[in-house]
Each structure stands twice: as structure tokens, then as C-alpha cells.
Image (cartoon, rainbow, N blue to C red):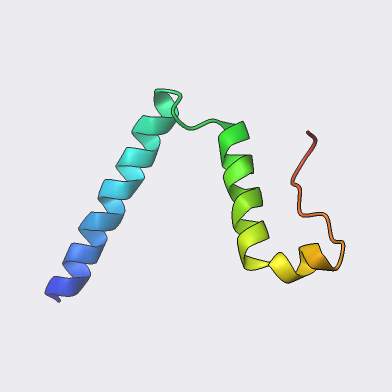
Length: 59
């Protein structure tokens, strides 16, 4: 029970932090797109070697 409460509080803390960063323009759609592209490239690197384009959106 204690572990679940701690996990829930950590999740709330992170979500509030994300909201504050978004409102104060530390997070932007461009930055989120770049992070998503980087994560795709890291986890799906074998597709890049096969010639698949993992770029998201226009740009």
C-alpha cells in the first residue's frame, strides 16, 4: 500500500512539473516531436538500418 501511494505521488509530481514546464515554454511541440523521434530511433534502430524514415510530422 505504501509503495502504491508513493508511486501515485511521484506521478502527480511529474505531471504537475510537465504542466508548469509547458506553461512557461520550457516544453514546446517542436521539442516533444524531437524527443519522440529520438526515442523511436533508439528503440527501433534496426528499422533505420533497413531504410525506414522515423521522422515525425513536417519538418
